[in-house]
Image (spheres, rainbow, N blue to C red):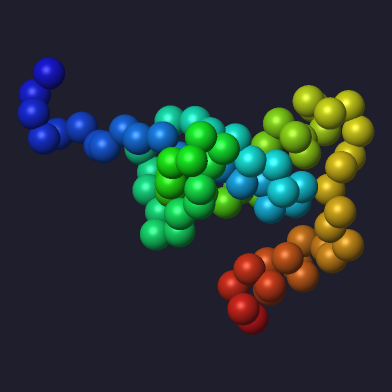
Length: 80
């Protein structure tokens, strides 16, 4: 492989913001936020809205505790 053309692949912790579920995986994305994992190491933290813990396909039921609609979530996300 050519050197210095590939993104940095590292372990990161993904946090499902709707359920609080965390899992460790590899990714080329980085983050300024970090968290300590169960093994005692510190990893970058990436927040996601949906994961296998909250997606209806995997759970068989709707698990999101979102009371606001799409417009309210958009306004909250972009501070409008």
